[in-house]
Length: 88
Image (tube, rainbow, N blue to C red):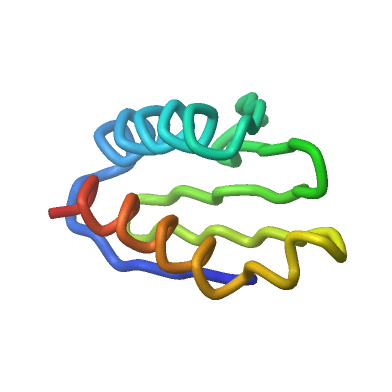
């Protein structure tokens, strides 16, 4: 699953917002995260991916395990809402 959004926040503020997204992901989906450069790695049970941040874009690229693949639509909607609220 890939979600890409444009922003006008600049890199530092985009990283701050990505940190808040990581907290939301942890609370809603029990995901762990850590920064590697400008890429936030996310992992959890049946989930593996990254949130890349630059001065103009957020790009979330996540692989879902088989069981979660069946719930991809609702998971995508929840994550898109989370990201869109942080970028608003």
